[in-house]
Structure formats: structure tokens, C-alpha cells
Image 1 (spheres, chains in turn brown, cyan):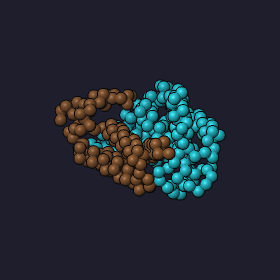
Image 2: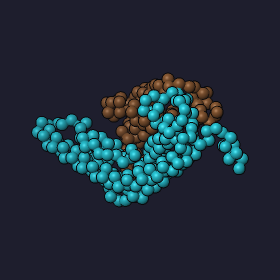
Image 3: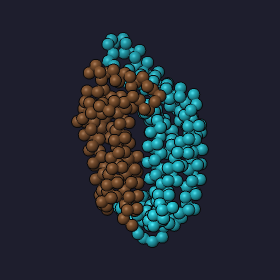
Image 4: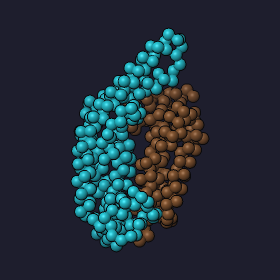
Amino acid sequence: MKEAKSVKFSLQQDQNGHLSPFKFAKLFDPEASWDKDQLGDVLHWIRQAIAIVCGLLWGAIPVVGGIWIVVFLVISSAIIYGYYGMILKVDEEDFGGHGALLQEGLFASITLFLLAWILVYSLAHF
Amino acid sequence: MATTQMLSSLKYSDSLTVVGISFCTAVVCECISWILIYRTNSYKSLKFSIDKASKKLETMKTENPTKISNKKSKTKKIDRVETSLKESSRDLSLFKFKSGAVVALVLFVVFGLLNSLFEGKVVAKLPFKPLGIVMKMSHRGLQGDDSTDCSMAFLYFLCSISIRTNLQKFLGFSPPRGAAAAGGLFPMPDPKTN
């Protein structure tokens, strides 16, 4: 716990840089304490990664139909929820509730997912 | 040479051109914003004060007052920090408005250019049937009834949102979260959405 606190302290020192010293192990450490900005950024990038992977996968298979957009949304929200709820075990009330955390990077990830899906689908199958 | 030939053999190679152009535009826009806003000292100090004030506010709200007499002075203090936070974020929005106008102009010119290049052309095939307003956008200026045809406008819209948001996030140019939270009471036009 002491170590986690010192990590938080050193991260908060770095106000200007977005590339704060980051420990990869912290991503899977339920003991670590999270700053609102850091958790938001981590959730944002996880969502974008899921969007790219799903988009490429859906386009490569290829799957067709609007239902797959819903499938993507459910998968990515479930992963985000599972990540902060089960792996990090943060209290969502400290960060503005489930809505704020699940909404992090949502719109950007939807557009990124659609872009990847449409591009791969159009280029690979016609 | 070989890659050009391979690309031209693809039916929807135009989609890559649209993505490439919009990626370059996003980079150019961020450069303009950097020159006009982010490198200036007044922006840095404004951002720093917003971050500081929002963090202070958060800790003040979570702390429990120990004495009843302290409570009154504490609410006063919170109010003061809140007002200063609101003022700073309003200043920030005004500041951003200036570069927002330039960026909007660039985006407008690029959109016009793309429009003249790909008018009436199907640049991609949608893997789903769009509805309502999405359909209007994705079928803008196209002939025929095939709703899965995708026009340049929709692809450009997707590119500009996803690439710009992520580029800003990556470069650390996204607006501070404290400002977004405080701006709720005073909704300001956000030049970034252009």
C-alpha cells in the first residue's frame, strides 16, 4: 500500500506531461490508487484498442449487419466494466459513477470501430 | 510503382485517399492549434490553474469537517474555488475560440477539395444498412438506391472525429477534465467539435 501511494505521488508531480512515468504492473494491480485523469486515459486507450481489433476482425471475417455494432458496444463496455470493477476494484463513486467511466472515449471508439470495419470490408472483399 | 498499381486495382482505393487526406489535415490542424494556443505561456498557466483548482475542489469536498464552526468557512472556501475554476475555464474556452476559427476554415477548405475530387463517387461499401440521419450522410450526393454505398462525406466524418480525438489525446492537447466538469453551468461553444 505504501508503494502504491508513492507511485501516485510521483505521478501527480508531473502536471504538464501526458506521458507520466507509468508502471505497466499498475494496470493489473487492485491495490494501486488511481487519479481521475489517469484512469480516464487508461480506459480511453483500452476502448480504442478494442475498437481497432473488433473493426479489423469484423471486416476480415466479414460480418454484415447493424447488429454487429451493438455486439461491439456490448463487448467493449463489458470489458471496460470488468476491467475497472473486477481487476482494479475501484469504487466508481469516486470517479463520477458508472456512467462517467463507461462513457470515457466511447464516441471516439465507435467512430474508430466503424472506420476500421468499413475500410477493411471495402478493401478486402470487393 | 507496384503499390500504385495494386492500389488502383482495388475497387474502393479512394477510401484510402480520403483517410490519408483527413489524417494529414488532422496533423495540420493540431500544428495550427499548437502554434496559436498550446505553446503560449498564458495557456499553460491557465491549464495549470484549472488542474490545480479542480484537484483542490475534489479534496475539499471529500474531506469531512471536524467542527461545526469550520463548516461555514469551508463552504465559503469551496464556493470561492468553484468560481475561480469557472472563470478560468471560461477564459480557456474564449482562448480556444480564436484557433477554433482557423481550424474550422482549414477543415472547410479540405472538405471542399474532397468534395470536388469525389463528388458522386462511391468511396466505400458499408457492411450494414444505415438508418435515418446516418443514411442521409452516407448517401449524400450519390446516385442509385443501394443504401450500403458510402459517400466521401460519411467517411470523412468518421475519420475526422476518430483521428482528431485520438491525436489530441495522444499529444496531450485534450481539454482538462476539470474544465469540462465546471463548464456544465455555462455551456460554451466548443470549437473542437467543428
